[in-house]
Length: 364
Image 1 (cartoon, rainbow, N blue to C red):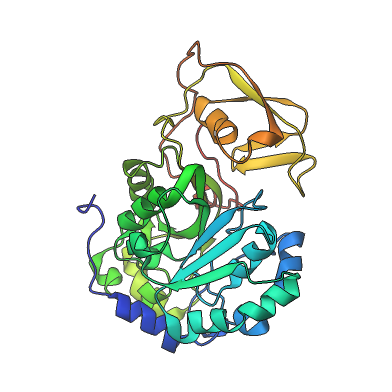
Image 2 (image 1 turned 90 degrees about the vertical axis):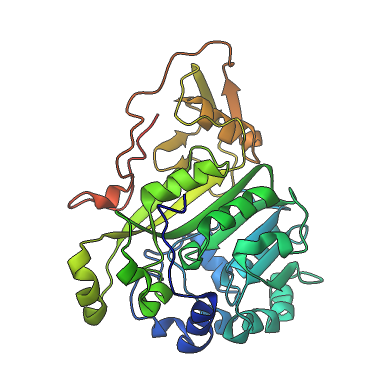
């Protein structure tokens, strides 16, 4: 794996300085790579209204990384910064749940998050904070005071690209997740491997551009550490919108995408979408999703309707916190081969000329 993900001269200290000193608020970003496109759904907007303005002012994210069905769960936010997504998740897990944020930058980031813990507990109507913030490196999650298999959901918003050892991050996530747990995160990806001249540019790295993984390297890396069948939720093209930086990047002809993936800790997941004649029926019981539920960009299951699925999708629903919301049809007794069109082309629908945000996913 190391041969396909070359090293960089950019250090953790460079990244920490960029987010702790160079950037003091969202408006200081020099590109739109670390900005979330589109309006958040209504329930997230309601959560945002209760979050302190000082926290909101220092948001650097490229997607919506808060999945459904979180009540009472333990959630870990990698690279939590000043705590925006931690405080969103804090409201969704409820007083019985717990949210842990980890970041390597105290000054201007964790200091802001910690300063407002009591404020948010009161705003959310909790007797005590259900949040914890830890200083640490996301490549060394084993150093946190967290037992293996103790976390239900891990989220991260435009942070993996900043890491010098992305495989270590994914490996650490799998170690911390409970069986059936999930890594649900947004990040920046490229359509080819980023050359060294760009990877060593501190500004492009800090702006979440030059540390981006080639999408196929990411998928292979995820599978190698035990996250079988990565599922793309949504994607969008990134336009840098900075003439000076575009001039540096233009000769290399790369395209960049923000994308949200969900990776499930289910050891039995197969490399491809295999057909066992199975199906599911969505009960319509997930809050805010009465008519249908979207698992990823090619699985939208209408309430009450029999929906054929591959074995991997069956497990992602049956072996996870989503199980109570579905009825399951079929067994593992007979195999009918691979699902058609389970391909390996670039998965981002936004890569197609003139395409809208979405994605074809490729299988079943």
